Length: 68
Image (cartoon, rainbow, N blue to C red; front, side, top):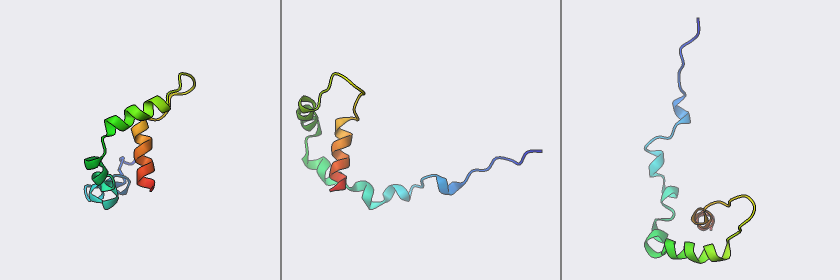
């Protein structure tokens, strides 16, 4: 007979984890930056018609800002 399936709770995120300070790293930037305008500016620079589709521009920019 098989053992019943059980989950490992430590593999799942808790509500306390969602309150971590690092997840609010861009909150200040959200208030000041016009993300739509930035995306329009970057779309003109970073627009390739060939090859594999790129990652979303705003995702890349936000990741760079968090890295700084």
